[in-house]
Every structure is written in C-alpha cells, then in structure tokens.
Image (cartoon, rainbow, N blue to C red; front, top):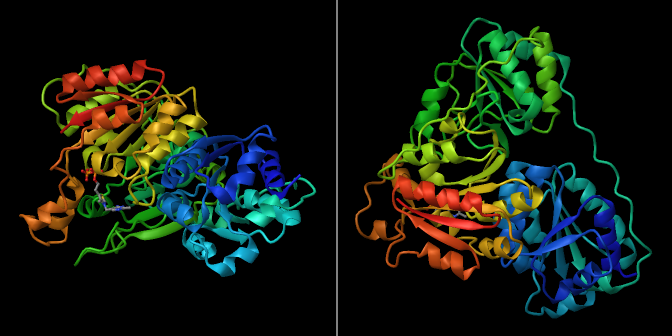
Length: 513
Ligand SMILES: Cc1ncc(C[n+]2csc(CCOP(=O)(O)OP(=O)(O)O)c2C)c(N)n1
C-alpha cells in the first residue's frame, strides 16, 4: 500500500470515520484510497470554511474528531476562520493538507507556500510528513492529539502519499483528564457558603448532562446563582433541564449582570472578559470587590469536579434548583418582533432539536425564552469569526442524523459560507435554516454607538447595510438545491417553520425583519 492508504487506514482504525473534503491534485492519492478502504465517509464541501466549520460541530455533537482534506496553503487558508472558531470551542479536528513533493518546492510552483506558517496560528499541533513509511505513525499522533481535543494539522507531501508504506499505525490513547484538587474544591465550597452573593459560572462541558444537574443541586443548597459564559460550545436547555442564565454578550448588560456578586466560582469558565475593549470600561467584567475562585479549568473532568463540589457541600441528594418545565403558549401573530420570533421558535421547537445559533443581533433574547421549550442542545459560535452557522449545521446533522437541526442565521453571516447549503442538499441533511433578513450588519450599528464613534449617516452607512441589491434568499437557496419560503410576519413564520420541520431534508426560511 502507499502512504495515503496507510494514512486513511490509520484514521479509520483510530475512530475517525467522517471527512469533510475539498481536494486538489496533491490530495489525489488520499482520494484514491477512499475506494480501497471502508469506513471513512468523505463529504464534499464547496469551500474549505464549510469543511472546517462542519468538523467543529461534528466534534461538539459526538466528542469524536472528523478529518478535513484541504488543498495546500491556500485551501487551508480558506478554512482558517472556522478552525479559529473550533479551537475556541475546544473541538478536536484532524486536518490533512496536501503539499508538493519535497524536491518540487524549491521551484516555487504556483501553489507553493509556507503551509506550516499558515497552519500554526489556528492549530494546536502541526507536522509535515517526511517519509511514506512514517506517514501512518504521524497520522496516529494527529488523531491522538485531536481526541485530546486539539486541532491537529498533518501536512502530506505528495511523494509521502505515493511512496510505499507498511500499513496503518495504532493510535495511542488520549491523555486522561486532570482531576481537580481537594484544595480547589474546598476553596469553591467556602466561597459559596460565605453568606454573600455568589455566582457559579459554568463553561465547557459543565453546561450539559450530569454536570448541569450537579450545578443545580449546588445552587439549591447554597442559593448561589448559576450562569454560563456568553457563548457555549454545546449547552443543554429546555424542559427538564436545570435553567442557567447566559451571561449577556453586550458589555453594559454583562457588567450589570455581574455587579451584584461578591464571589465568583469558576467551573470550566474563564474570568469573563468583554468581546472588545471599550474606552472607560473594564476588560475583565467581574466587579473589583468580587473574589474569584477557579475550581476547574475547561479541560478538567467537569462532571467529576461538580459532583465533588456537591459532595463537599452535602448537596448530593438535594433536588436541583431551577429545573425548567414545558410552557405551552399560544403561537403569537402579527408583526415580526424579537420576542414574537422567540415565542414561535419556543412553541414549535421539536424535542431533542439541535439549535445552531449565529443569529447575531436578532437572537440575543432567545436562550432565556427557550427554557420553556422542548429539551434541546444549543450551539454558539465560539470565536466570533462569522460564517460558522451554516457549516456547523452540516457537521451537526451528519453527527446526529436522527435529530432535527435548526439554524438561526444572520443574513450577513450566512453570506460568508453559503456553499454549505449545497452540501445540505447533496447529503439530504435534516436542517431548517431561518435567515434573519434584516439586510444589514445590524450589530455593527450598535457597536458604532458603543464606541461613541457617531451615528452612521451616508458613507459609514454604506459599509453597514446589505441593501442595493437585496439578497434573494429564496433564489440563493434554490440555486443550491434547497427548498425555501419567505415570511414577513409571525403567522407566516409559523407556517414556514412548520414546513421546514415537516420535511426530512434541508429547508430555508427567509424572515424579513
Ligand atoms: C470573519 C469576520 N468578519 C467580520 C466580522 C465583523 N462582524 C461582526 S458581526 C458582523 C455582521 C453580522 O451581520 P448579520 O449576520 O446580518 O447579523 P446582524 O448584525 O444583522 O444581526 C460583522 C461583519 C466578524 N465578526 N468576523
């Protein structure tokens, strides 16, 4: 077998069974190996940012890395934005990036570039394969890294792909998670029982499953407030789950939400910082009088950390506080308003849906309302680099084909990686996309005001509005093979959303705002 086949066999042997690919000439041996090796489903993405965003969400839903297949430095470069988001989400990915043969590089052919240099800022691990005989061992290390989880980038010169190899290599087990120390638990317990206003700030895997339940027991026992970071890689919400408030995105509401606390206990969360620096406002948003106790970093075993903290507080058998129950409200009708849209979504959300949220300014209030909806998972963009939502929906739908995926998508953000729609159609992914067609970079209007940079008038307005021409979302969706409909009030939204939910494939709703 050749090096490429040993690579693919190592991926499959190591538990990597999905690839999101956009190949070129230097990846042809990898492509040929797909016909020889069972067990790697490779999905074509028409832009590399779709492949990397899909791999991010695939990891979030399965805890298993997918691979990407990218074409030299430029292909990898196109995928960097969503690799950035994936790193911030702590998603494991194995990027396979083709490269020229070693002896060809000195001739500076058109696609020659410093691929390691392109890879490094958005990868946790980078290696260039040196020999076809050692490609399998390099791949095994990349897979181990991805399970850590890290973004691992393996660069594959074509002569290491076509040269002879012995066979696949076994993937070493991942390094086990750190357990938190007794001292950290004791400090957390002390902070929560001082009798002063205390916040238990959750991040990473602390906002789902058993971990969330332990947090609810701790809140019930101590009276502390539960909050999550403002963006969460995957948060469980809805009926039957412990309700956790999401820290607001905007700096002033976030400062106001944090002001009351004398103690902040961090489990899987970092000290909350504002998205940007704003003149005269602090970067770290906890008040100065607030004492911070870091119990567990995001890469620790957070379920074990919260269970141990609950035990230290004698809260193991305390019923969890704030368990949400299903609210069956009537569907609202009339004009499109943020509250009205949230009410429609909450009323119709199917059980166990996966919500991919890149709604930017249109969806700020959604998570609070969703507590009364059916149980669901909620995925946020973690690195603020827009163009993530549609690709992420591809990855989530591939990861969980039995679940409905709903994408809440700003029209500006959608335009970065629109090609994801084509992959949804081709793979018949069960995704309903709602595009918030406000025909504007609406959030930036608010940011202009936040930075006291003045109100946009003419030339400034030009770079913040998406009018002239209006994007036709029905035509854009249909052009990618996706059925679509338009809504301009809440009644039509309900009709269109139901139509999407009833289909077993992709459907797009253009919501005129
Ligand atoms: C890669 C990248 N480019 C640019 C930005 C700056 N940016 C942040 S939000 C935004 C506009 C988003 O527009 P839309 O999705 O329509 O949401 P809206 O603001 O209208 O709610 C832009 C351009 C960014 N965050 N990431």
